[in-house]
Image (cartoon, rainbow, N blue to C red; front, side):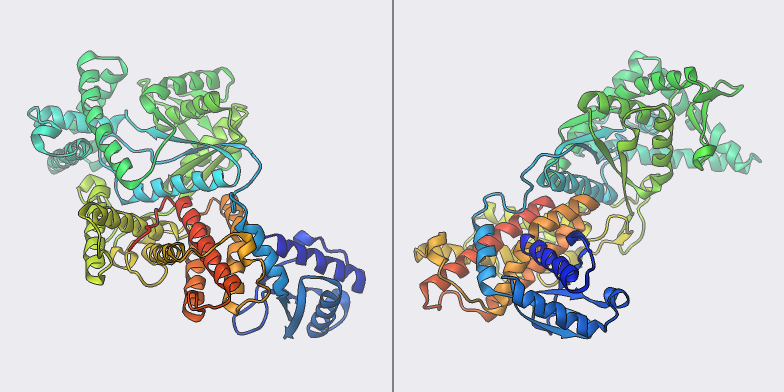
Length: 596
């Protein structure tokens, strides 16, 4: 915010002129003044008492007096126990508002910065998306949009885990138990159908293990010797050898899954610029392994498996290729990292992956550095915590996964029920009502998952998320709809909102100043959210702006105002809040309704 920067510059000059202390303006910390005191910005004087040799209160008084006499921004001040509270002249607020109201790109960076690849979603083609995937998708999409708003050139990519032993498990179970079932014949989405057979494999596999253990075999050996596991491993080898029948089954089942994924992605409002498939990157990964062997970064063990020793990096030995020549996760990750860099020549590559893979990502970056890859330093793991429902953690292999499609459907139904009970769809057509239910459901779900710091494990409460009261998506969405109604009425009354119409306003109500302060902070908020890769910063801002506007709406009359300039200003202020709420929420991937 330019005003905040100007005041920081003035405080820096005051410290130099009064006390001969050099403090860069960027090191001057200003915080919002607490509601019970007059002022907009507060400067804490405690850190300077030892250097200056005066009490915090005296420093505050001397600084406040200097700022009032020597700057155009500060017209009054008060000092409370070492906290210097600065009151800003209303003429300054008028100027600040005029600047932001007439900036068509308000909040977004004007200059282009670096090129960033954001990889997110990364589903397996053996099961549908679940609640954890939702947090991943929403987080990746939002971070990409925030980085775009901050001036970065962003590419959204999705690495699909379409090969490997887990995929073969679903394929084998379908071969054994499927009876040529299809999504059409079963009436099931393709990704759900594949997931059904993944669960069936696991049940049959566990039964075989129990049988072997009961005959006297140790559990670990039974897991390896169970016939189904051996068959799945043989299928993986046939796949890597290009066996026609195996490839045909793989293509058929993956095709079903992709159709299901596409439907889910469209429903939850996320998109991608490019898809990568592990089936297309694992061979490049194998080439990277050969490169590492030639550079003596990797080594072979007697059984033919290939490893890397990362002891110098504080890690341990890591398998990069199995003895039978089949690849592991890290193999294809090496290939994908290389391919992404070849495709986009990026400055940084963000991986949105759960914190369960923290070690794996450390290993990936360490290997790439050992190989001397130019992009190794640009890799950033955006780690996020698991999501639980009140009923407990998700476990896909046991068939108790919190299914994404089912959860979204339940959220839409809950939105339908609550909206109807509150009477917020009067005059809506059926299509308009259905669109509103979906908008509110997705707003509730996305906001609840994104308002929390990504690194924190969280408990998702569907009922709490869709409330119209408190720190929720629907509360912010309703605030936007309320303002949209005000703007429609203003348009009917032909109230002008151009600069000339409200330029005469020279004094403001306290709540108007608060709203302008909140609005002016938006560009800094976008920058902070980009720097931290934290949509939660945007979410909290949108909530605070909606709260502040609602206080203004309650305390200040808009349409009963008799001064034309003040009336025009309040309508324009409302328009700016609606526009900024919309921009903030779109950075979270959330639509805001025009009517409710």
